[in-house]
Amino acid sequence: MKLDRSAFLGPILVLLGIFMLVKGEIHWTTGSTFAYFWPTLFVLPVAVFFHWLYFSILQRRGVGVLVPGGVLLTVAIVCQISMLFDSWDVMWPGFLLAPAAGLFELYWFGNRNKWLLIPINILTVLSLLFFAVFSIGSLISSLAGSQPVIAAVLVIAGCLMMFFRKGKAM
Image (tube, rainbow, N blue to C red; front, side, top):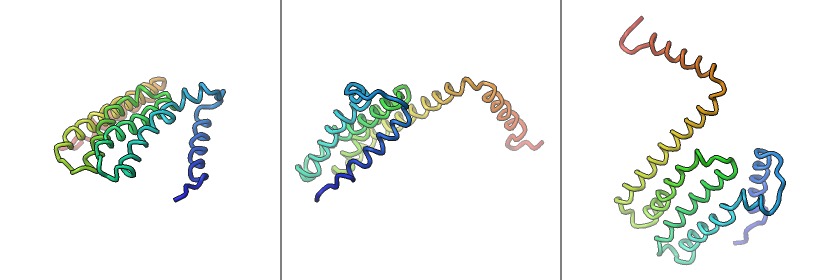
């Protein structure tokens, strides 16, 4: 099966264009390319290698290689998003999700050992909880400059809670 060059380069060019629109003017040098895209250049290929190893060379026998493959794939995505949008303060819970992704691949493609679901669920719930808390915290801190709007929303919410209480009619 021959891979069409445009099928590979097309999405890369679209993502690069979106990145340039979001970041504004960047002076492109070798250093800035490595600074922004090190996860895609160094971590992602290793993750893809582990998956390729399992699906083609090992012919679905060495399911254990999917654990580091899933971990590295998740870490590469988290690091790449964090680098592009400078969002390390919000994206760090993805590192808790990484071992859950690797273990889930072991569960899914392995012998479906139900005991793997315990650490998978614990790590996933913790990661999602921290994502929610820090995302909401980041959103609130970015809205801190618009304190009158937040104050008005709180007053309206408080009034609605007082006037429309359950079981008590006005």
